[in-house]
Image 1: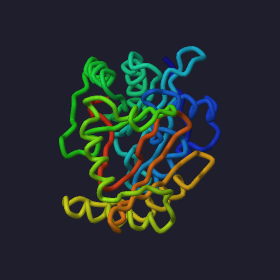
Image 2 (image 1 turned 90 degrees about the vertical axis):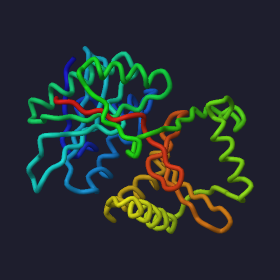
Image 3 (image 1 turned 45 degrees about the vertical axis):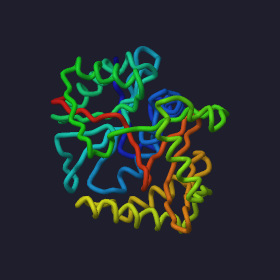
Length: 276
């Protein structure tokens, strides 16, 4: 497998073809908005991180992609990197060889440790974990980590009853019922909702003794989610007069996932770390 890299500004022309790359990410069962080229602007807005975009090819076919985040001090990159919600592959069986190819390429770029967080669910998540363990990777996920659980919904024009059917969605149905009784409603988010979401998130992080995102990150996220060309959606909920906003990205596919939220927050399956 051959790995090619785009520069830090991943919205520039890529040798693999930008539209082709984004189509691959959004068409994958494990695709996520955090792995699209445009998300690099949001990632860099948090500060002290450089982004680069890897495309792994097998012949003429794209086998996988990854938006790689690498911390840096001033202009000096540090010897570790992470891939949030990735690497992205079309089939879980290709996760191991794609990850191996990216890790080897990063090693040549001075990266000594790599953390990946592939975005699979159900039985595929178990297979993904096994594939990564076969590379010598180890699970570093903790119960209080930011990627402890996930809720992915394949919409496809299905009714609410169909979306939340089955024993595995029992708690979701119960929570939805409680929200309905409390008078919760959802609507398209506005500019004012972003400041509310930021305040709620900062309060949540403060209660856990953790730091919060800088203002520049929230500005970049709001700009990203307000871009109708990306079919991004920001949604706000209100219950008994109390705003509980959340920000959601809906990609160009039948699957929707949350990119940032406060209240009932869910993320990816697990994080793993290994010497690259």
